[in-house]
Amino acid sequence: MDIYRIKGGKKLSGEVEISGAKNAALPIIVACMLADGESVLRNVPDLMDIRTIIKVLEFLGAEIDFNKEKKIVRIQVNKIKNGEVPYELVKTMRASVYVMGPLLARTGEAYVSLPGGCAIGERPVDIHLSGFEAMGAEITLEHGYIKATAAALKGTSIIMRKISVGATANLMMAAALAKGKTILENCALEPDIVDLGNFLIKMGAVISGLGTDRIEIEGVSKLNPVNYTIIPDRIEAGTFLIAGAITRGNITLKNVIPAHIKSLTETLGQIGFDIKEDKNSVHLGECRKLKGAMIRTLPFPGFPTDLQAPVMSLMTSIPGISVVIETIFENRFTHIPELRRMGADITIENNIAVINGGQKLSSAPVMMSDLRAGAALIIAALGAKGTTEIRRIYHSDRGYEKLSEKLSGLGADIVRVKGGNP
Ligand code: EPZ
Image 1: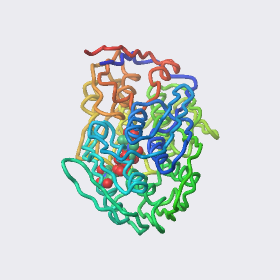
Image 2: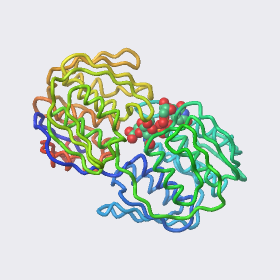
Image 3: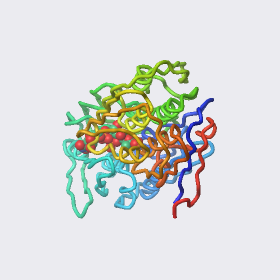
Image 4: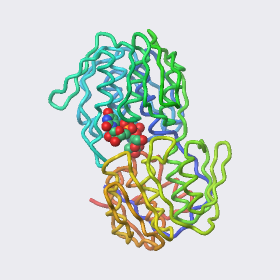
């Protein structure tokens, strides 16, 4: 398996182009199943997760062409071949459960492996399933599979028991073709959900309330295939800003929406970094006197849980005490033991981590446990003394396009060693 070898201490500088948003592209690719014909999606990042969701749709009968250089995906849907979406595919990527909404809406049945948990938590899908039941679906669980059937989905009122990005996406897609009006309450406000909603509206869906916690969907009888451009990836953007910060560098992100990373840029400002925003770019500049900060992860527009691990790596380099409170997932501190191997002084108390920062970390062999924990280790290595080797880097391939090329372009000393860890 490949490893990263990163020599720390280089200040990052220059410009980096941010790719399309993985977590918007995934549901939007699935939403193409809601209409017969060819949809064309632009600014789609070339990521493992995108290739996985394409495999899932091809499994269900879609014909897909992915031009990786041009970042264009053409999705031709004619006959949906209803089938069992196998565990092998779903276990590699939970977002495969997104197919349930379109399958139920278009064919009246869905047979999808129950996604297992993952490194960051148990990650149930009960909110998705109870929403489908409220819309008239029959749900049974057998041999690790979800079997859902519905003669016809009916619009209804649903108050989700917890804010869930995935459930909001799945239920919005199902409601788009249901009979009557669906009111979803306690919705996620994430930009990825707004992007999915805008895509559905372009297909002919009747949706109001996007970007609020109450979304109304008036079901229609048919949707049409469309051309659409995916929004920039706010988590990739935040990851690069944090990488620039730990190296005390001077970088500009191109093709970003500053409002989508406001909670991070405000935190970086509080710590003492100079942040400048333009319409589609964000610049991180010289830092003033740096001091620790406290973050609590929350649904959008709060601090994103996907940037919690990366920002914790930065906090190890900031003099004084910083505090991280993780409120979304129950096991999202798996990066901490690896950071401690590099000399980080971090104390954990339940979902709270206290970071005593200011010392430069030192290189040590470390291992990624999931996508964003992996990003945290890369960031830590960029700021550390010596050369760090990182294993299981397939995790970061899931969510960061051309990561080592982009970091090298900013002056990082990073090498991807093929088969570096047999
Ligand atoms: C999405 O996951 C993202 N993935 C995650 O990004 C992100 O961390 C998460 O939202 C939170 O922002 C994609 O968009 C593909 P949730 P999702 O449903 O939809 C609980 C990354 O690194 N819950 O908002 O699975 C759940 O356990 C990934 O790109 C239920 O209890 O997250 C969690 O505690 C990691 N029952 C909380 O809600 C349900 O039916 C939020 O989960 C659904 C969720």
